[in-house]
Length: 261
Image (tube, rainbow, N blue to C red):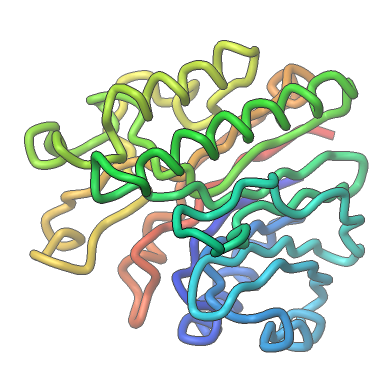
């Protein structure tokens, strides 16, 4: 069973690339972030035509998450974590969607970026991470096979970035962001990509600017965290790097984990 995550950076703009990836790699579950569309604009029929059923949580022009499952309908468990946005009266942003697929709990997230740092957006990022940790503890207590995955907007360690100096002031790798991520792992979750690549050097994101892709100036911010039940079943994990190099690609590459039955 392959479970994957892909920050698509606009589902309408990247739809041909997304369908291409789905048909070529055929994950059992695909979690999407930054779909950047309101609920009524989500192209569910495009995925149904290739055998995928979807649930989604949209937002106009920004954010948005979706879960696609091959041949089965995801059973929605929860949407949102109850964290209001950083602007007064903004309400909650569309960043979290949780479902059950084939007996596995799927927790799909798009964690706030947090820039500029310091400031209200960074405070929001840390508050959101605390709410996420609380939800992960609730899922843990249910003792179900679970995977928490998506764009965490956290570079966990120096080995996860092409240049520590270049990113030193960014919210993605501030001590507070990293500490919050470490606390998630400390609760017993396994970082699938890191566990199989302990020396680092694996990127999931390359900026569109300054020739970052061509120079391989990337970093790892898309993560797959496994409960003990699933960590014991992990057969492989990786990054579909080549899709970042295709025409009109997202600035992220898909990440995935392969689980034994």
